[in-house]
Image (cartoon, rainbow, N blue to C red; front, side, top):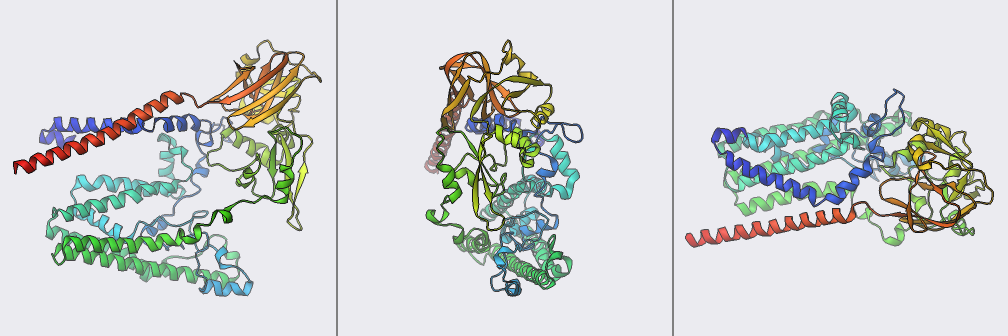
Amino acid sequence: LVLSIRERILPHFAKATGLLALAAVLAVGSNAGMLYYIDSHSSETMRGGSELTSADGKKQDGLGLQYATAWSYGKAETFNMLIPNLYGGTSQGGFSQDGEVAGVLRNYRADVSQVPAYWGPQPMTSGPVYLGAVALLLAVLGMFVLRGRSKWWVFVVTLLAVLLSWGSNFMGFTELFFNYFPMYNKFRTVSMILVIAEWSVPFLMAVVLQRLWCGELDRQRLMKGLRSAVLTVGGIALLFLVFGGALMSFSGQGEDQLPQEVASAMRSERASMMRADAFRSLLFVLLAAGVVWAFAAEKIKKTAFVLLLGVLVTADMVPVNLRYLNGDTFVLPNRAEIRPTEADRQILADSTGEPGYRVLNLSVSTFNDASTSYFHRSVGGYHGAKLHRYQDLIDRHLSKMNMNVYNMLNTRYVIVPDQQTGRLSVQHNPEANGAAWFVDSVAFVETPDLEIDALTTTDTKRVAVVDERFADALQGVVPAADSTASIRMTEYRVNLQRYEYTAPAEGVAVFSEIYYPHGWTAYVDGEEAPYFRADYVLRAMALPAGNHTVEFRFRAPHYAALTAVTRACSLLLLAGLVAAVSVAAVRKRKQTENS
């Protein structure tokens, strides 16, 4: 805008800005459905916070700061963008099968693939954010030779990504964004913001190559900038090559408890890995600089320039990538298939005929493992954005093995490992509440804290704990104990649950399904009926007397309208692309005819 005012080209600025605004509208519109559902779902998940009061007396909006910054990049670890094995690379092995560590571990009959080469500050990692020595050299070259408008915005967003990736290692800056910038507290792993640097650095590299290709860079300025870029990027690699062994400890957390010869071998091999990659990166920096110099000095043609740089980038990036994603990562379907254990088969042979029961698997990390769900409806499992109410239930009750809560979740079977043999056995839980049940009374509470705390002592088979915000749904309804009333699930699908019940009088039924307000609709004999939340996470309804069928059906809200918007904007984008290509072709033909 400032430049447009100075050069008196405001109409051009207005047109360009208008086109960008239109592009933004079409970009959002062509993803309207996905964005809407993510936004509406987010508020119900851990990313939207919790209604419970924390220790400091506040309600949490978004993820907790400590949880969100668990994977924080170390400040020195940032240099693995240039030297991939600066901090050992990966937590999934990483040491050589015939290296120093493997030799020592043979004395302990231990497998070297189980020992993490990574020793940095993150809890674990699958590999470094390696940007490439060639890409970094050319991007830094761009900082020395490009005009300000072409480079400073790229530099700023890259620096911002790096600073935010430090997380708990630069907490003041992280807290600023976490507390005041919209949606930032939804991140699960702050280090993932380095994906911006993985885009911006190659982008700046591409701009430099485009200017070189078109001959838009002054030769003297280019040579001076190339020298500065080599000294900067190559100098960092050389620094770690020569002094890295003295500057770094190469020792991870807790490794002081290992036998001295093992810990010493791990430090020694990590230092060797770092030096090897520092030399490797320095070599690629010098080779790439040589290619750029040869092209600038007109020693090689454009074709050779492109081919040589292409070879260097490929030789730089692909071998590093293959360290973490190679042929061993891909397996045949029959090898990846999850096969049922004897315990699984025993549960799958359930003969009660009523669907909807759940399984608690104590042979795995119950709330961080999803394998149980392959065969059963698991009471555990894992998701990075679990419903916040269910996470509250895990923290307050399930992790403490409150069987009253497991019963209300209809946990009919428990898989238990034998402590001696490891063999799995199945325990039947006869106290499970069932897929649905009528309660004798309703206990209203004023706050979510009181609601979840009440589950510690309340007999959920007889009493439903309900937030007073749902009092209107029970206006005039007086549930009472009635041994003749019964309700059972007859069909279970992910988007449909069907129940049949008999009740001589109006009553309140609780359903062992998680309450979620967006898209689920309840019906009694095909007629829509209201429902509400009970026992902090479950569904409940006031049901009329008689013999009736209850259904819960899911339909994504506003699906037709959002689909129409998404389709229309996508078609407009495609039409715009076709129009732009057509206009460019016409202009080129006219220029050719005029010349």
